[in-house]
Each structure stands twice: as structure tokens, then as C-alpha cells.
Length: 220
Image (cartoon, rainbow, N blue to C red; front, side, top):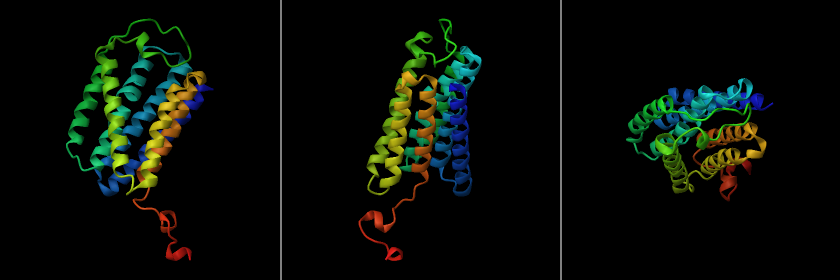
């Protein structure tokens, strides 16, 4: 069951990433490309969970999950938010970081055996603190800070969209903490988080008049 839930989360995230990529092709807004890449990384992480739950966790599934889920998703989300705020230097920085993260995930030594057939392996059981775990902590902290900071800064301009983005970040964090639900809890967090983030990204800049405290002409 956990594998099926994770596979469904992967399909949903891939679909939403594709929709954002389509919007980027139409508008060439760089933040849409970064957000599409972040949801694609989310999808790969969910796919790795499905792989581990269906086949049994090993070093290969864990490396893919860690690279996509722990090292790439939040930093790419943060890069998209910074690009939205006009910080164009975020694009080359994100590209260099993504290459570094993938390289580290391929080269990082793993220790300990993957005895459990189900349940996402704990990073501390298989990775030393340097460099992968430290990089994950820093990258996730900075990426989340960028997303939340930009959202709060422009909350009055895009109240609904930014509220959905913050809710998406919270849903993913809560999903990761639902240890009692096993891998399914993380997969559900990914699915809900991806859906909320997508809704926040594509939300209109301003709400209809009825939601801003006045009735629009068409509703009267």
C-alpha cells in the first residue's frame, strides 16, 4: 500500500511539474522553470519511495531519494521565489548547486546495512554528517527561508497564492514527521505539498473584489 501511495504522489507531482513547465514555455518566466524543477524533484523523491517500498530499500533507492528529496526540492523552490522577487543571480547559483548536490549524492559513502524492507531509512544510520547531511540542513533551511520570506514580503499583493505556498511547505514538513504512517505519511505530505505549492504558484496576483472586502461589479 505504501508503494502505491508513493507512486500516486510521484504521478501527481510529475503532472504538476509538467503544467508549470508548459507555463514557462509560454511566458519564459524563470521562476516557473525553477518551480517546475522543484516539483519534478519532489516527484523523483516520491518515485524513490515507491521503489524502496516495492523492491526493498537499498543504497540505490536511498541515494535517489536523498538527492531529490533532501538536497534539491527546497533549494529549487527557494530559487524560484528569489527569481520571482527579481534576484536574477539565483538562477546560476541554483544551477551550480544542483550539479554539486547530484555529484555529492552519487559520491557520498554509505554505511550500515538496509535491513528494513519498509520505511524510509534514517539518514543518520547511513550517512556521516559531512558533507551530505550538513549540505541538506543548510540547503533546506536557506531554501525554506527564501520561500517563506518572499511569500510573507508580498503577502498583501498575493494573499491567497502566498498562503497556499506556505501551507504547501508546512504540509511537506508535517508529512516528513508522520513516522507513525511510515513511508505513506511522507508520500501523502509530498502529494498535498505539491498540490498546494502548484495552486499557490498559479494563483492570480489579486483576488476578485468580493474577497478584498468589496463586491465586484459582476456580482451585484
